Length: 302
Image 1 (cartoon, helix red, strand yellow):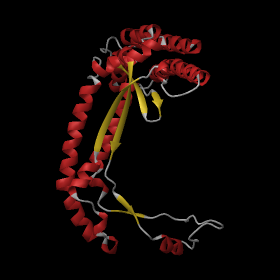
Image 2: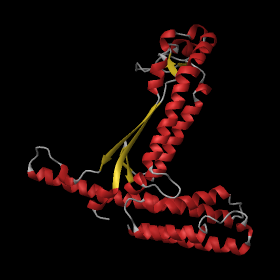
Image 3: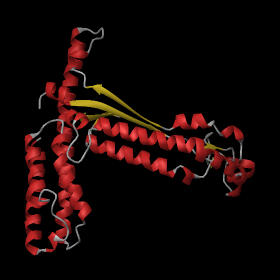
Image 4: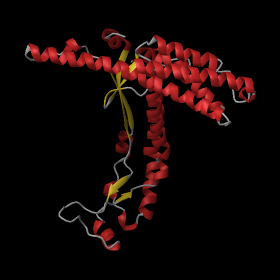
């Protein structure tokens, strides 16, 4: 894939998840140090030997939102294939962003659904659960309770959120700052090299993930372990969605992913009961091993 293709075939996506802080620092270092016969600070330093905090409400009251946020991040990474552009920006295929795949709704509609659900959860927590938790904390925390630790219901609601920013991948020629021609030419060269490296890194990462899933299948067969339906289903959905996730449109990777779908998962119809048959096991192991070897060999050429 050339640089112009990656520029039009992918977008940069930044997912920012925010949560309500359940804990506050407390000044109990001296008491803790005394209890454990420790110094309050390290020798020759002002750094404290202890850190202390308190929970302002019971953690279990917020666990469902924290779990939802973790699942949101996990699903987002499935859309991007785990490919980063910078620390805070991921690369996503325009195919998966706008059109999705057979087993994945378009990212944009997924985002709206997740945001709507999170907004409902945040509102319920802030205006119903949080006030009750605050009342309980007043009884449970004793002298640790401080009303100043507790923001308003609206502030709690506003602290819980999900924000997605979408940007195009810039062209090297977009360096429009006042630089001498030689410096600007060097920056454009470095940027183009970065584009090429990103394409390679992406394909290698997708190859590694697919090869790892195949190895899990073959190792289970060799060691006579049960292959769960969830494992086969995960492999099928991943391989079937791979061409949409891959913003480089790598034809070799697509062909090998198609082989996984047809030969190993039987278009998603193969299950653990079918793998009880020795001939079926042998066929799956042979195909999975051959495809994994081809994937690894292809990765070596990149």
